[in-house]
Length: 251
Length: 194
Image (cartoon, rainbow over all chains, first blue to last red; front, side, top):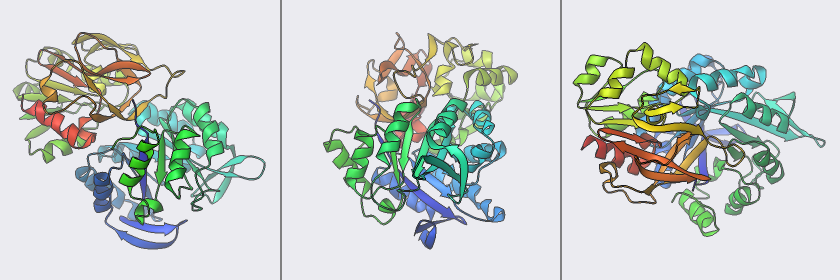
């Protein structure tokens, strides 16, 4: 039986891992390669690297970093952040990334999903979708959550799946940073509306939040950053808790 | 020397990294003569089947891969390309394993089948020396090969499917040993030791 996945997310700036909350108060967290190796050893099922480097010049460091990470770990990893061209995707996959996550670029140009899926396979293309509830409905945001779009959350998720994305990485901006639990309501609706795997993101604060996402919303994977960075919740402890509560995990 | 086939449809870097970790000499190649000179062949693959088969034809590798007598290991799409036919792009494949690649039913399960799944060993194979049923490996596939007489292990995703096959010198694994931690490295080591 397929295991539910636990995925630590690492923010990368200028080739270094950074820790912070909501992109502010960033502090250097060390070498991404060493952190990746640590997470892999602790039982992470996959890793996500999110590049938040601002300047294009310095983004070039990402390619050599991906190649170093690929040498150091034997579990799959996804790279995201500012990817907008087929050539970038190809270079990242060639450097050893298993998947890329696409966010703003696919909102601006949805056909990038189908082109990339056709060329590299759906399994390599993650649609990263940031949503926020405006009181009436869930809207899609781009550019790191700074810009609201006209897209409605669930509609865009379905469209991304239809166009050939292999997974949806759904971040609830309302929940992100709150440690209040994942957005179970939306995730449940999403997981029952698309036939591709769903990764929950935003809001994890304790073990029970993961259990709720798997049990109540039936997501396929849970992503978290600060909980793992600051070692508030060791991955092994989380997985053993999930296992004891009837969730199939890889221990 | 191991020939790691690069035909423009495989994540060659990951397999190369794993072979380096195992201290193996290998060449990354799409050259028929080099493939024939190698002692072992690794045939990786990610992406779409009909595109991959077209690449094999363009590089003039289709025939040589069917008739080699050396141990050859197909990984993921590489394994599926060793079947008779793939419904992914409706393409005739290498015809080593007489079975057809079918798509998982999206009404019954999430597709792609993505993540760590366990295997049940159903036939003895040198690939599984030191590996027991219940071991978990990383999969990322939308298509699968049914359980057939060549199946050496199977996994379940609503239905049972082949997670590995074997026939004479031909081996195939649906999962990614190069991405499956220590157990995956053990599979690669076992293949190298054949």
